[in-house]
Length: 110
Image (cartoon, rainbow, N blue to C red; front, side):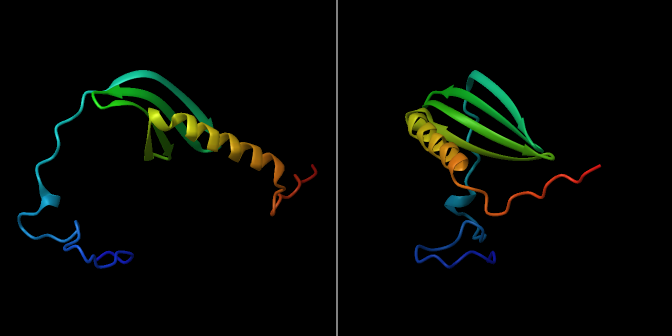
């Protein structure tokens, strides 16, 4: 058992091997995705790639963060993009209005 995993009342964990299990089925075939638009931005040491894509299930935004070769990705269905943008706009506004708790030290005089 993984340290932060708790036993499930619904049966075995996907991490436990049990011969034939629904968690160990054949891999899914790749889904054909068309890239509609892609943009990249570097913020400090992080590189973000935003890609608007479309597949047979619909459109979605894939946001990939690359930090030193390690990648993390989130996918937002196009049906939620307006709500996601509204939340990001609220966070940008709050970031500008709420004062820093731990301001950075002033630069050293030369």
